[in-house]
Length: 256
Image (cartoon, rainbow, N blue to C red; front, side, top):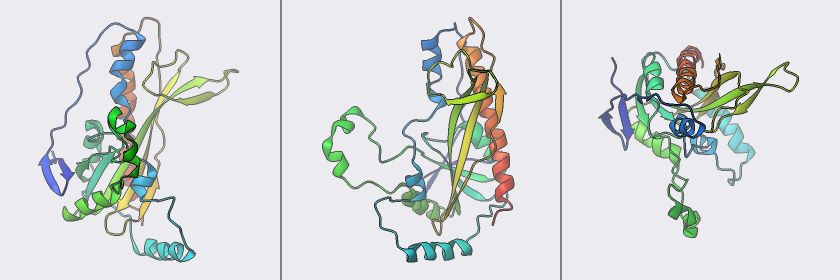
């Protein structure tokens, strides 16, 4: 099996993939909420941080034309077994299941996906001077680390759970976001939506990609254990990783 490395300040350290062990128990909404809290990320990266977009910077027509010229020079082709940096938004390291899937196609290193611009403690949030301090440029710091480690591409992904409910006429499915609460009783389907941002280390050029969603039927019965719910939710997420990694690899083997 290929080794996975942690990329930080251009230093690589061996990383052991660790899967969370779930303990079965009685069904209760508070219990499910607490045990499902790690299924969605915290302190998510924004697209502005990943794509290096500053909405306050004045843009000229020359800037746009220059960007078009640069974009035509670069290729986003990522051949199999290429070295990439993998980042999961809102997580210290990408989920083990996603690492394993991406390792089938690439030599991966990992990096933190926690936003550096968001305060991490209540004290920091109350500190009025925090907003006056210069904020670190996340993607440029990562590009520098990746360049020192001879990595060519950075792949950041966002994942979000959605629950599908019948509409009031019971004619179609309406998808609602899931935010670590209990799953709604009317839920019939679950899906884990993933989107990627790939950034070229050399140029900073980027491309977004959203693979097709994978949906699964959700079995929600009375007195269902928290373990049973978590098993279904985890299976949906891991299935989404399998398909997303496969679709990503197929697309970027051909994309220029």
